[in-house]
Amino acid sequence: MRILIIFFFLANNIYSYCCTCLGPETMEEDFKQSAYIFEGTVIAKEIVWVKDTLYPILVEKGYLKAGSADRDSVQLIRTTIQIEKRFKGRIKNDQIIIYAGFGDIDCGFTFTVGQKYIVFASQNRYVERDEPERTKNSLKVNTSQCGFTSSYAKEKSKIIKGLSRNKKES
Image (cartoon, rainbow, N blue to C red):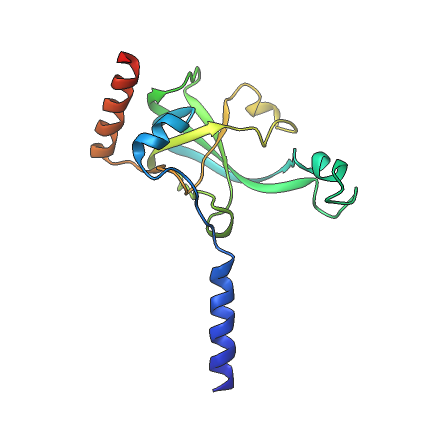
């Protein structure tokens, strides 16, 4: 019985740290809020360490001590997508780099190599420096599971195409 009670409290504690989304409630809202919307296929994915651009600000304001262990870098997943159709935003290249967390707790969206997606993305203000040479000319954006990014669906693609037409007409 004691083990069952401990398990119950541990299980409830795990869920209390999960992602809480405060993102858009409708696709139309996400369309308006997103800087880039496109569909494409994931061609590469890797875990990378990048400078945390918030670190100096947190130290300056006194929230963190300078030199705090592992606080000046953060681990993210860098996903490269081959763009097949653009709906919103100026994307010059045929590929785009997306940064996201690992999912669940950090609200990161989990992509699968070889799978096609419809992506609602924002300009990345988080990852600005310390990028390998091969990504310097690529647009870097981020997305999360809190918006309408999802696996490709023909019906959803048609709706977004309609929203992008309406935007151009207004």
